[in-house]
Image (cartoon, rainbow, N blue to C red; front, top):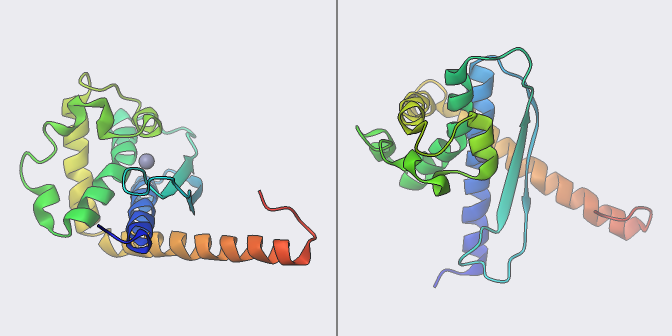
Length: 174
Ligand SMILES: [Zn+2]
């Protein structure tokens, strides 16, 4: 059985890689990211539920190309797959072909970000995921890791800030 601390850091890295995937792919297509963050969510059962969550807010702006939204939307799942596989299996041929038939392939917010529906858009999403995996393992690899690290550092600073507020008694932490 994995120790809780190990689960925490695994989930933290997973959440950071996920949001970093959305960020670097959005930036790659010149779509602005309003904000992104990850935070811990203590769970009663850390083995079954993720102990870290994340969120990214992206300016819809004037971007209307469906392929761009698919790429941004799948980027979180792709980045996580790449991280947890820890090798290039995530971009092996046909890896993504059956993934997007299932609603469980992504969170509801990721489906929304993709502007796509399970099954209906599976082929388009598989194609987008293959392109995104190439980018994240290739020219954007360093940016991905830097963005993930930044999210982790920011989460640590946010936690320190909240603790300090408690100490001062001057502010109530949310
Ligand atoms: Zn996501």
